[in-house]
Amino acid sequence: MNTSGTIAQASPLHRIREIVPELGGGPRRIAEAILADPLRAGESSITKLAATAETAPATVSRFARKIGYQGYPALRSAIALDNGRTAQSGWERDIGTAITPGDASRDVLDILAGTAARALRDAAAVIDLPLVERAAEAITRAERVHLHGEWADSVSVRELYLRLLRIGVPVWAHDSGPRTLDLVARTLTERDVVLALNRSGKDPEARQLLRAARRVGATTIAVHGSPDSALAKEAALSLYTGVRNGSVWTQHFAGRESDTLMTSLLWLLVAQRRSADPTMRFVDDGTFEGPHGTEDLSEAP
Image 1 (cartoon, rainbow, N blue to C red):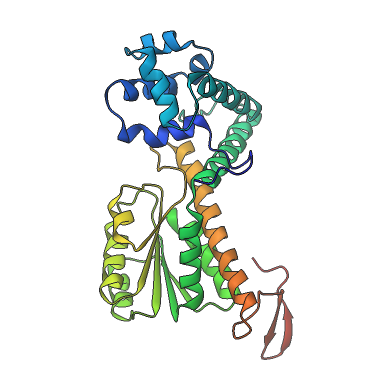
Image 2 (tube, one colour):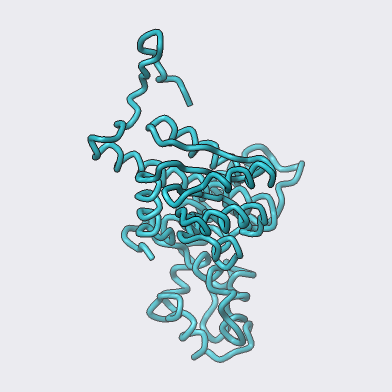
């Protein structure tokens, strides 16, 4: 986990959400009590939180150390600080609550801005950079790169496609059905890279494409919001975006921010590598030598 610098520090609430699936008994009740009422947790004594979670104060201390704090006082201070950030970002309400038709425009804007800021901060703290670097190296050296993402997943995939295309990467984007993906799979070789983006990690077509690519020796990359998903296990390089897949719209919005962060990081790392290699095309400078001379692409996407 990258913990260098204040911006990259994951919030304590994010750390707790990440670890909940691994917990049981008293530790799980502590985590659920904190997540159910972060404001109260930021002010509670260790005995009060233990009583709420129906466990012992010593268990609360061990829980705090388990998620990276020296003890409960340090965890409580971090939660209180996070609550302050939340208020400053316009997060007076739970981001899991749907925005209602009666909300003022300023409230809607504050919720969206706060959601995006939190998502980026949390994602930056947990993205596995060495793994992303390996993915970027594979894309840089690939003979062909195939990208797949459907519906909302296709938004970040489409931008990644355009960015890679502009720096000379032989890349294709596929957002159509299983028949097309089956045809794509038949053309793959061990010199190709296949990247599938699917937040839930449950898309059977994405899994099938990665499985087919793996059979022929192609490098497989999964970008997702579910580390324990079937898709994550199907790929050689499993890139968790740092924000878990959610069940309500504001959580999906947060996830999309982390998707964009991941795909932007990928293409920039690829651009760096291509720029440093004289045998490859340099980073696009905004111009393109077309059949009728130089065209200005400075206003292109």
